[in-house]
Amino acid sequence: MAGKYEAVAKGLPRELRGDPKFRERVDAVKAQLPPEQKTAVRAAALYETYRAWKEELQKSLDEAQVRLSAAEETMWDAFEREGVSSLKLESGCSVSVTPAITFRVAEPDKLRAWMVANGLEGKLTVNSQWLTAACGDRAVEGEPLPDGVVMSGAYNKTNYRRG
Image 1 (cartoon, rainbow, N blue to C red):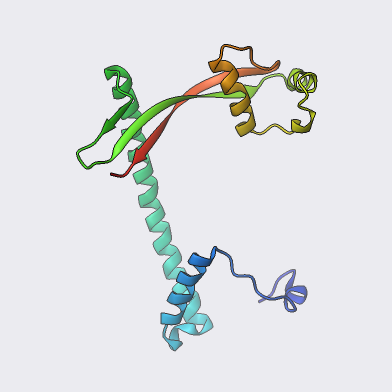
Image 2 (image 1 turned 90 degrees about the horizontal axis):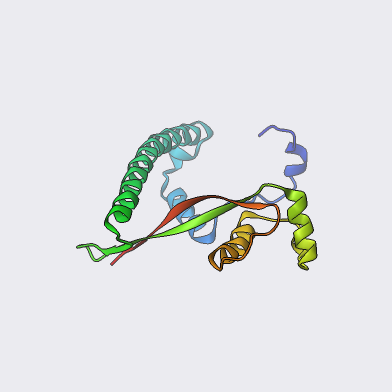
């Protein structure tokens, strides 16, 4: 294998990616390969075959996601129209829809000043999870949002539990 790091990489152990259960599955498949599939040419051809298979599966998954999203959005509309927030299906599974809100920092300098004034200097790196947690409770309780933050939208969260 040629490449920029070839000389350095030669002295290092190869790291195989993936969690232990994934690695076990990969090793099991490798163990099942006949010796003639373990040549450079045959292994590369096998890689090409599986890569093409994965690309075809991804197309199917993409289409499934489009259809799932359409069904989910239709369900949200119907739940809202019919005043329903959860249902138990004949299969025993349950589906519930809960609203959630999103926030964005509209004026970073004002938010920074508010954080300093409220003893949150250590949190000056604001990620979306913190922003949602900090602002969501304030919005629900009717308290003002931190300076520089605005509610930017709402979305539905769907929870699905198998029966």
